[in-house]
Structures are given as structure tokens and as C-alpha cells.
Image (tube, rainbow, N blue to C red):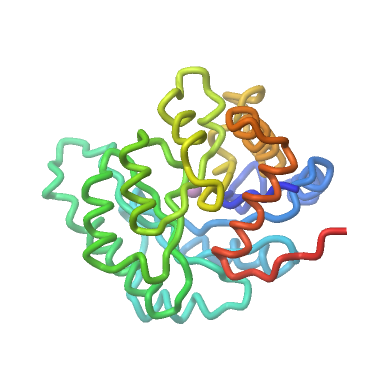
Length: 263
Ligand code: NI
């Protein structure tokens, strides 16, 4: 009934107990997961998991925060995205949170890397998975300049307030909420959870990070996306089923995955 639109089950702590992680998904009615790439060095582990499991999909991209990672070219991303289980380009975007003595002007390498990903997404027609932190204006500006609305995509692990969500929605992007929405002080994100049009909403874990309440502070895993879904259902006055079905449909439509027949 739920889909985890963004996880890193190839990371330590999840990859080494993958059969249990997949079993926990089943037990919690989490039917599918998208395992998101953060650099080309670890991409083979993402692709291997997706190739081995029907209900796990993959993306190709280099995270904006991975400064020392191999820099991808447009051609390389396009080529890697031809793998049959790759449904998206990312995660990409901008992250100005850790400037470490540098200025925003010094972060041109991130903006160039982001443009590369958008160009690859336009060529392949695969949607973008966008990470933005402390950089909303530049993220939205580059999205507009590079016509990211053509492939479309999702603002993942969204932590901005409603006005930023509105601007992303204007570019026809989806909004994905993680376990952060369940945190007591996350009132901005909870407002977003109530206001995003239901056909633009996705849910995710971003596991192994950001476990939702009641597992906050503990290792996260895709099964826990059910807690994110239930929390948002409550916020919106929907049943768990309604929220789960709507966000799962959005997932299959956005990532161009044939919708499985529900028994
Ligand atoms: Ni992530």
C-alpha cells in the first residue's frame, strides 16, 4: 500500500541485512522502493540490488554534497541511465549547508554538476530527484533556466516552507516528504504535507537516515515509510489506504513504472 520513493539500501547497515529489510517492507505493506544513487563509485551496488529484486528500482546521479566524487558528464549519465531498472536521474541539486569557510560564489562546481544532471534528464526523459538544502532560490532558478520541467521530477526530503513548495509545484515538480514530517517541531513541513495537491505528493524514508517517530534517532529502513504515510494521512484527514494508494500511484506515474495490479 505504501512505496518508499527514496532510500539508500545499498548503504552499510541495510545492504548487509537486505533479506530482512525486504521482508520488513512486505510485513508493513511497503510494496516498492527506489534505491537512489549518490555517486558513480557506489552505483554498481545500487544497480545490483535493483537488478536482483523486482520491486526495487534505481537512479543514476552524484549527490551535490559529494565533493570528491568522480564528476559525471552528460553523456555518461545518459549511458548509465539506459539500464532497464534505472527510472530517474539523481540525486542531484544544491547544498549550501556546509560552506566551510567558502562563499556561495565558490560553489559553482555544484551548480555545474546540477546543470549536467538536468541536461541528462532532458535527453533521457527520465525525471529528476532533486536535493536542496540552504539553497532554494538557486535550485529553483537553475531548474527554470535548464527547463527541468520537461522531464519533471521530485523535490526529495522536502524541508522548506510552503512558499518554496509552491514555486516547485509551479515548475510541475512533485514534493516528497520524509520522516522529518513526523518530528514535533517540523510545523513548516507539516503545513506542506497538508497543502500539496494530493496528485503531487510522494513519501520516502531517505533511509538509513531520518527515521520517523517512533524510531527517531535509530537506523531507518524502507518499512518505516508506513509511519510517514500514516502521519500525513492523519494530517490530511484521509485514511491510510487513501494516502497510500494516491502516493503510490504518483510514484508509478512519475517514474513511468507500470502500475502493479492490486489484488
Ligand atoms: Ni538521499
